Image (cartoon, rainbow, N blue to C red; front, side, top):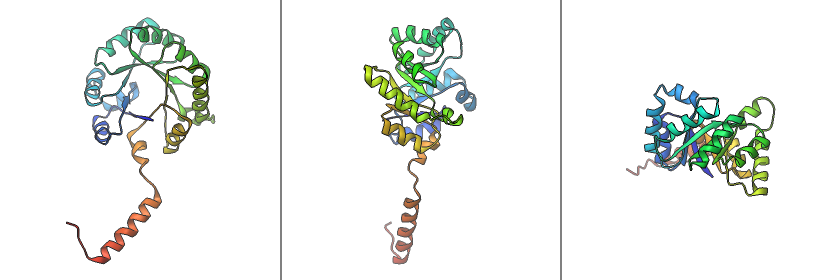
Length: 217
């Protein structure tokens, strides 16, 4: 499974990247706003830091404008994935941009039907939003499973990018089902290392070590 980090914070990306935990980055207008940086500047910096795909989202809502913005964003670096919303206009933009050989991430997917359309439009990635479905008492993980089954049935090459991940369990379940990629905030990725029994065991080891009175260095 590939790990994308869902942030526009350079320091957080660099820390995970140094550990080999970053296969790509996803950004969106909200994350750019949070970073307080110029979109073109911060996206270029991320692209220089990370070898894998970096999703940069259009803000237009009509197809022709999305295409123009997508082409502009794609000029930033060769590893840009143009991010478009799963609307009819977004699908039109996806078809054109993917036809030009550009990576396209179709975002805000909430149904298997939408995922089918994105695959047929040539999307590189489809981003189903797990957490936002859970928020309205629908099963976000079931959507990942449905898309995996459908894509496998027909050999669609679009990669399932599990998004809106809120917990480490979302990552575990996405891996179990067979999502190609997860994108999660840095804090959630780092939380995967935490377990109370690890903490308890380490505390016991350290207590025993202190009793020996020894030092390694």
